Image (cartoon, rainbow, N blue to C red):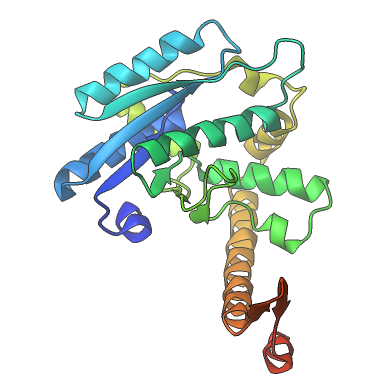
Length: 252
């Protein structure tokens, strides 16, 4: 997956939290990078929301060092007077990681999202009435959502095709332990409720959801490509974007 997503970069960044998904990605990526001569660097975001977070980041640092991977802990301290939502923490995490990637001279950052994350996203967006574009879910390659910090940074998700259960079995066989964030079991959060629904799905239902998402991802990629080709024919004059009628009509 890393060969397909990344090619042969000089360096690759990894976002590793200490949970099972990102730890499995660290283990796989370190072997891949060693075989191909790619420099790996790793970052862990400490949100400061739990007292255990700092020690968990140090644990990731120790694992990274044992694999010859440079590690840095990025610290974010939210406003203590305001309630922090998972969406707020997620955006703060992306901004910190994008700033770190830029400082490291990276153009590519790997995230440990899995097939379970895809299905959870599908269920969340389905319940919110999302259209087909949203239901396509996370892509294997995508631009960073942080702006302007993430300008020019590509996110890759090398374990997106694997289930969390498969990755945890691999870690157990390797004798590696992971941490579980207690917030991942708090039903107040929409993502946690979606995770519980995902865990209750049968294997055929999971496969059906992933198949739908695969088709929607291909549709989204095709439409984005057509829009990009049309925009290449556009001209910007006097702060107005002018698109030939023929290019617009060809979009369908």
